[in-house]
Amino acid sequence: MFGRFFSSLLGSWVVTASSVMLCLLLLTIRLPGMELLGIAPNWALIWVVTWSVKRAIAISAIAGLIIGLLQDSMTAAIPTHVLSLACVGVLTARLNKQRYIQEDFISIALIVFGMTVVAETITAFQFAIPSNVTGITDLVDRLALNLVDIWTQRQQIILCEAIVSSLWGPVVYYPLNRWWQYSSNS
Image (cartoon, rainbow, N blue to C red):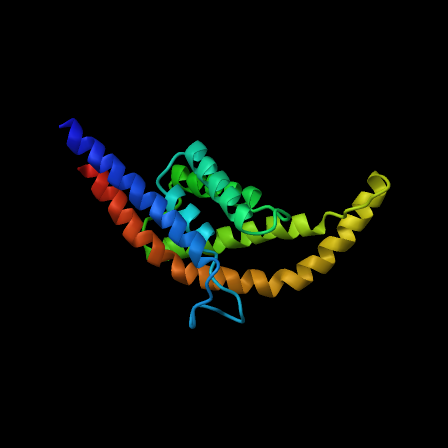
């Protein structure tokens, strides 16, 4: 009895870790037909949404934090992906707790779309923070100017990434959700 439980638990961990690594590797690959105006899906965000739909807020935040750290280790640390992915995990889990969502392909696509906008907005705020400021009023003035410039530049990026990610979201969600249901029932 314990042997079957541990093998099921180990299998679940292997599938989960493998799916994380696959999504992180897909971030580095540009496959034909997966881009819109040169923007590829945010596979890390899709995985965090997939994980967080049926999980508690704290576990979802930790998953977003870990995936963000892994993504930061693959890219530059500024802007960090930890903030955006942790927020995505918390907000997605909170949606589940409030029972605003039904679990089907359209709901997952809409959640991924919205969370992509949230994550990219957090990233845009990080780009807007000025590096050398002399005081609080200088910070506020320069931050406001930077936000306007960065927001106008990033609107197309945010929209394209949200569309592409939401289209590919169910492709990650469906098999992982089925596996997690199967492994929890056995």
